[in-house]
Length: 102
Image (cartoon, rainbow, N blue to C red):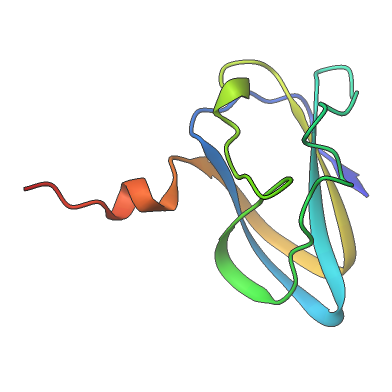
């Protein structure tokens, strides 16, 4: 397990750059500033990430939205099983970035 220091963020989802073995995975938990898991964002709620991806949105119970925590200090707890985590980024949804205006 790896845990971040308290941080604040902007954006609506957490994306990660990671690589796992076939038997490995990455899961992420969002905690409050004191290190208590936030309901709905626990390790058990997180869909395991498997494979090798440059930019993948983390999801908890089928949702990626983390906008409700914007501006409030959080900690991130990472469960890495036979996995490497290269980068994390909070950003607006992937669809937002690719939207074309007419």
